[in-house]
Each structure stands twice: as C-alpha cells, then as structure tokens.
Image 1 (spheres, one colour):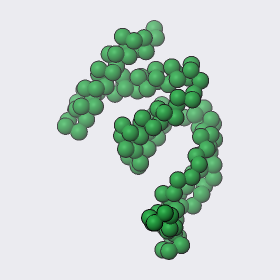
Image 2 (cartoon, rainbow, N blue to C red; image 1 turned 120 degrees about the vertical axis):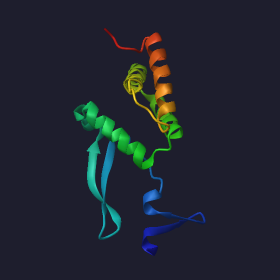
Image 3 (cartoon, rainbow, N blue to C red; image 1 turned 45 degrees about the vertical axis):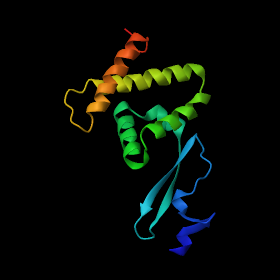
Length: 139
C-alpha cells in the first residue's frame, strides 16, 4: 500500500487523486484492475474523433456517468464554463444554444418528485428565457 500513496506537502494522496496537466484534446482511458488494485491504461482517445462519432443518446449517457462519478454540481459546471471562455466566439454561442436545448428537453419532463422538482422548475424557466432570447428552436 505504501507504494500506492505518495507524501505531498504533509498530506497523503493516492496516485489517482494527484493533479497532473490535462490535455484537452485526448482522454486517457483507464480501467480498474481488481487483481493489482490499480488503474490500467487502455490508451488515449481523441476528443475530436469522439465528438464526431458520439450520438445524442450516447452523449446523454456520458454526461450522466460524469455527474454520477465525479461532479460537484454547480461548481463543476462553472469550472467547465470557465474552460470554455477560450473557445472561438461562434462556438461559445453554439455551446450555449446546445446547453439550452439540453435544458429545454429536460424541462418537458412531466413527472417529478422531491429529488428533481427544483431542477425541472428551473429548466422550464431557462427554456422559456432561451426561447425569448433567440436561443430556442430555429424553424
């Protein structure tokens, strides 16, 4: 176990939790190895090629898994938005339109309970604002 943990600035951190520079153009696929109790690299994947091939249903599942595995909600989303500030201006507009579309789709959900009631209410308000601001469906 000692070889899996590094001493850093007086705190113990696992190799997995160490911050390292992120390449925004590739993602390194890793799979948990139950025998070695470490992550094994499965190789890099181009974000560009993934984006060209992914379908809406697959993207929804990807986002679901991201939120389920490591998201901290609003703060995580804000940090992602901050990363998008360096995108081309036209892509920023397209990204906002895409995100508004996601929220508008969610706002059409009819049945809610205490866990998602506030989210659906906010989604309905955002969808209405998006349409009023010109980010609604183009017909």
